[in-house]
Length: 213
Image (spheres, one colour):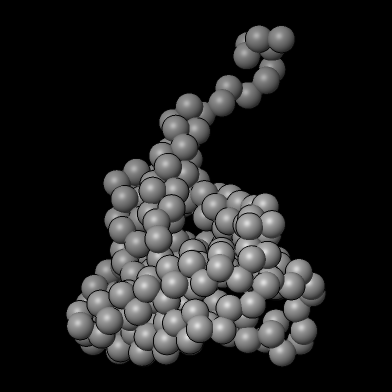
């Protein structure tokens, strides 16, 4: 059947814009950061993975949508608010990094089991904090992606859709794909390496946020 036989012709511009949004979203997501390090650790331990992935993807969707809707201008007009977020987020990441560093001296073999209610609540609160108290998230999603989307005019929401799909794909792959490493992390020495990387990442980002504030 040809396009002239009644089937709607695809909007090539919209498809290309979605692909552009997907690529831009991936380029900002696939970096070593506090959020990704946390999701990776939760995935390897198989603790509250669906919740953590859902929170990260949903948060990105909200922030990207705000950026496309024009919230980036509001954020730029209120630098003091972003500074407060940086201070609080920086302090939190430094504390989390210290806790990860402490685990270096108490490594234990990984136990693959369902998370208890307490650890589930802790995972949710930690994930929300790392997402919403990290100025870098606002810079990437609200400001940067929002600004790029604006250049696409009437197709800016198609761009946003592509970026949101990229976020969902990335966090799903990171959270659920991490379990493939469970055999490696059955050894305490592997956890020592991972926690060392997590500690270094959290402390570096936390100190950077505090210095920048």
